[in-house]
Image 1 (cartoon, one colour):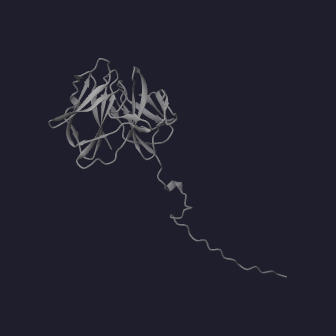
Image 2 (spheres, one colour):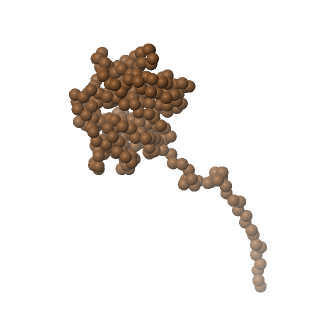
Image 3 (spheres, one colour):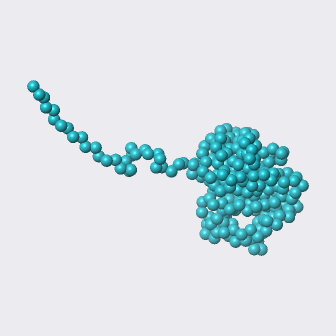
Length: 255
């Protein structure tokens, strides 16, 4: 005796990309931090930067130069650099791995979706040794008619400096004291930590005067800086290749 079973048709509705079950990660943009790498070492050799064991710069960064922003991993990140065609790390530092600042690490790592600057430079008390410093870059839009300006002190062997800012005939003390390896205006107060802040200044022509112990340094590149409204800039104050060289400065444009 034959048995007949009813035919049951199951209709599956088509899933659309708006469906919450669509988890195709390949279609999603990767989540990265962005870093511009700066070579402020008093050594006339280009360097390459790495995160962990991955090289992230495609062109060697020359002395007192900055790379474009490149996407990197975020959070707890080890940053290294190599010199010339060498493969051994000249310096390494772990950012975001420690509750306190140490020679090899610190509490603040790159943040996803944000912009940063990492500077390779000589150690404060020994220009023959290297270190790495991370700054957070606030690239939000400046007010109308303003540009954003920052000062970084990486002139090895130069003590604390005073920085004056002049626009037209108006000159004022911008920063009374900036220590080596620091940004002007950086501060640490309780839980509020600000590193590498920018100042909103009038767009146009700006001149800076850097003084050590009341003596102004002769740095021609700090005279007549041209700042465009809406853009962000960093003045990199650096040392010469030789210890007796007068420090210099370079204007870096962000994005």
